[in-house]
Amino acid sequence: MTIHSRAPVVVGVDGSAASLDAVRVAAREAADRNRPLQVVHAFIWPLTRAPLTPAPGAPAGAGLRNQAERCVAEAVAEAGKVAPDVPVTGVVVDGAAAAVLVAESRDAALIVLGHRGLGGFAGLLIGSVTLQVSARAQCPVLVTRGEARADGPVVVGVDGSELSTAAVGSAYEEAARRGAPLIVVHAWLYPTPIGPGDILPLVYDPEAFAEESRRVVAESIAGWAERYPDVPVRQRSIRGAPARVLVEESKDAQLVVVGAHGRGALGGLLLGSVSHAVLHHAHSPLMIVRDRA
Image (cartoon, rainbow, N blue to C red; front, side):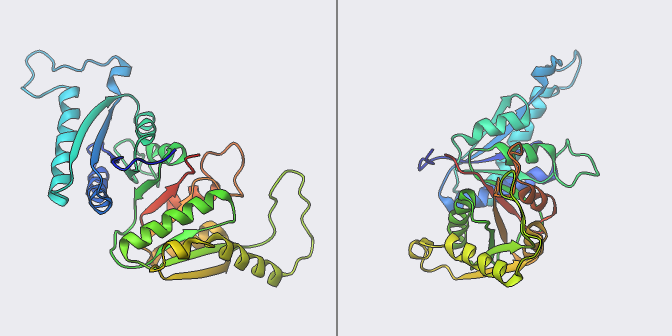
């Protein structure tokens, strides 16, 4: 699937402070990409058969439907303050939030979400809707967590899989758009099984694995430098658990980019274990990239 030239940036809102932060980020992203912005509120109450109209004697503007429309209007107004030249539309769509946003992703250039919403439990580090959309969206998902900063590098994690190639392409594009350097990171700790029945060596040479890691990084960026000659690139091979390495790198980054499903993920997981861990613990905004094919 190819992103058409006027595909919008889509931001999900629910009236929470985190979703308004996401609106501000989405407005800037739409302006930078020269794309329209669409504000979406998923309205689940019709599915529960709850009464949507104001109760008898209620003040004007009461009722769940009116509340949903006010949520969207507030978000549209906030986007207009941040990026007044960006065309903004707002819609209330009946359905569960994750399902609505995944459907929107089919024709979107980017989905922007806050890391937590009104439905989040205090003990959760990431909202359930954000987690579900990150795992299933058909376009990149930008999660606005951590510190938003205009300096610092774009960091991308690679593992040699086809999906990490898609992540590298998105990371180069983001670095070029932001005028930022790009750090390409491959983390390795010890031999890991790639498929069922793999036999792992009892003794292995750390330097050989370090050399293999450097090869993975070099091959991951092959050909991209010609397309983005003005992006400074640093290649890093780091011994350590991949999720922990990327979380540490996120402390100084303005954006971390990962593939949704990497080489080490189990077939039944829609979001790989590394991507899942970074989504929960990153110190910077995170972009999760899924191959549209």
